[in-house]
Length: 225
Ligand SMILES: O=C(O)COP(=O)(O)O
Ligand SMILES: [Mg+2]
Image 1: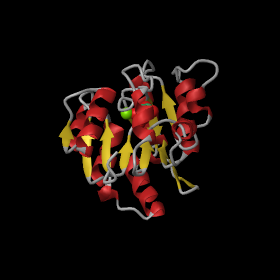
Image 2: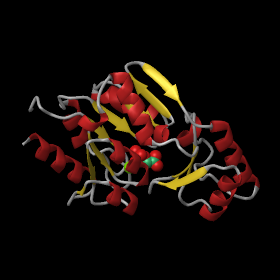
Image 3: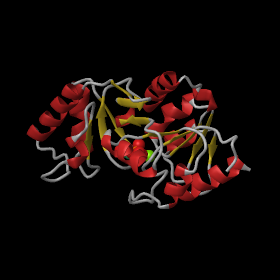
């Protein structure tokens, strides 16, 4: 592989997965072999990207929970008001809402700075309750996230770059949804896969022709040419 490979900042769901969210097996070889830093920037709770880095055998450079948790160079930082997100979840439940994850909520069990809600939930009620608590709701296509305004993947990614002593401008970003728009704003080059939502498409420098990992892989081969 080319030693001029640029560092990458990659979304997970919709970018390294198939449509239902299963990791595309081709991501394993592509990322393990990448000869520059790879940052995983996701809306998932902290343990998910950390585990993925572990099993890919790559450095643990992680932006989790939409920017709420950042890990780089063994240093972890947190932003975001989990207590306020929990208050939204509690009131949502009191008013008849259901987070939708069943009896063991592994989606939120390890989540430290926000709350995620299944997309089958009552969106109007969730948004109304969140607004009363001055919290934001975003729809990634995989979940609704009740998050602190101002906490964004892109902000977390900038913090990560500071820790690593790297320039965000050097990175190539790939993503698929509204939670990637802030990353696209700070990375040097940004690409939305073809399945991306409108927010990601308009924030990206380029919309790829192919969807999911097909799109991501075609870009990775192109930039090594
Ligand atoms: O957690 C989600 O809703 C989506 O996760 P992603 O940011 O890796 O696409
Ligand atoms: Mg995504």
